[in-house]
Image 1 (cartoon, rainbow, N blue to C red):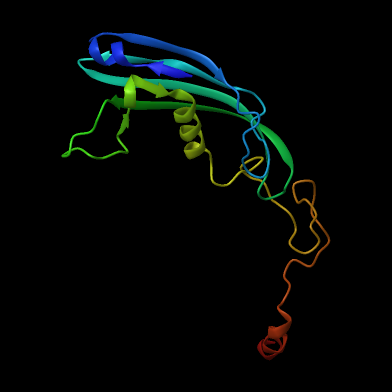
Image 2 (spheres, helix red, strand yellow; image 1 turned 60 degrees about the horizontal axis):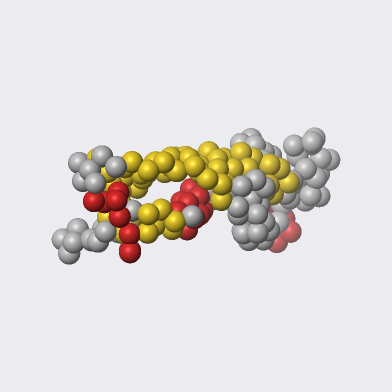
Length: 166
């Protein structure tokens, strides 16, 4: 979806509502297609005192694999994003992180929403915060129950040193 920004930049007090769904079901991420539902984007862009701001709420569900126990699970995400839109940056204020430059009075919202979401996703994907993961010896899921493995295994190269400490 493209947002027409010409009137937004030219008329103080102008406000444009945003309400659409972005289909990312074919987007490849984490070795799969995790976006289970379309991304619902709601918000507005407005010119207040010649400062154009964009505010969006994004909600979606992803089907992911836990990084610790490898089980598949679904999680709902909800993010709020705010940006300041400008037509161009001046030489003295060239901090690209604070502003979104709108070329040709059109802003590609799909690209902006996707980049915002990707930058906001957690780096470690867990099915729940206290996930115990897998046993490093036998591979049993420790969330289901404990395994019978010897927990404290000694490196075979260091066994002789352990005998000296006894």
